[in-house]
Image (cartoon, rainbow, N blue to C red; front, side, top):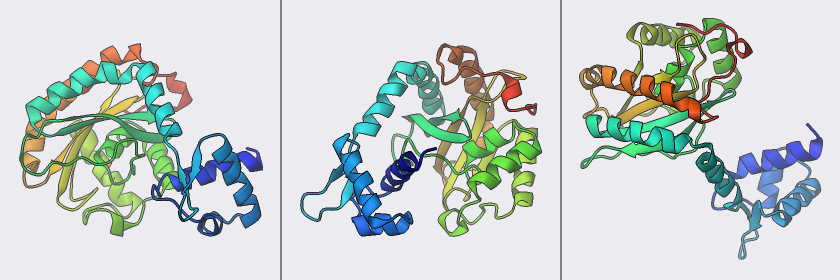
Length: 269
């Protein structure tokens, strides 16, 4: 990757976490870039419409151009059209938030949702985020379909994250995570409580045809007081049925079409 391109992408990724804008000096220091070079890169991003400069303080922030491109891509891929009826039905049955995450290389990204809860606490985290594999039900559902070495490799590459940012039951070691994945494999889907966040529960199952790699994950999430362990185990059959349906119909979308298994090595069954 060229130096200019790497600097540009670093700035864009940094600004995604700062919607209110960041000063030039802060950006340069945070990314360990020379201030003059960082300023030149920002001006190029402004010129091409990816970044804007705030009128009063002069801070830099992303425009909606990349968000628009992402939404356009998802719309043209057909993934939301295919998945929405499936997750809508599951949300109606469970009366909880149901989400679809897509496996994209080594990332797991939320792309669609359906809110089934009609009252009480509604759980609705940001869409479009890349999920922490070690601390999310979706991450566990994907990792449990890989062999142990592959799962460990992906977790180490992404990192376990700061335990303070997650729930009290979040795994803090590879050994603890592998134990959780083993339990998920036996069950056929993952369940977590107070892991991604305190007071929140979630369960997830992989979207894949037998013997092929996982292309997505369907997640059910809600407050632990309502989404109890008993209720999650009860929702298990409906969740697995939904992922099976999406695995069969999802090949119509390039995002849910399984690639050659050999690309990733053996797939755990």
